[in-house]
Image 1 (cartoon, one colour):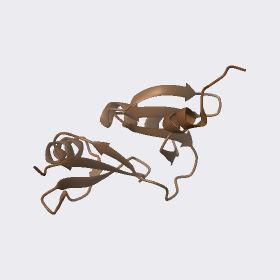
Image 2 (cartoon, rainbow, N blue to C red):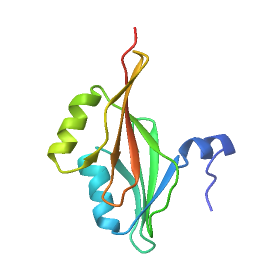
Image 3 (cartoon, rainbow, N blue to C red):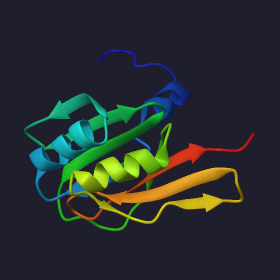
Length: 123
């Protein structure tokens, strides 16, 4: 067994949000192709994978979706990304602007798991 580093290092590498998806391949495709995540690990036998986009790390596993945490992805233009995702047939919520400081929108994967796109807009 190799030395994997400190507990702090392990915590920094751990997925921040786990999503269960009914169709493992469809879920992986959605997060990689549609939302731009990079897959950093996949276990085809146990059907789970780790993905990253910027500082956000998530994990997907095959199973029955349930309410869980929400991944937040920083984007340059929430409105443009929301429109692009709508055009691709993705379920997208209403773009919200919070006190002139932040734009947010919820998007949903094919199993209804919620992912939030965020754009700082304040000075």
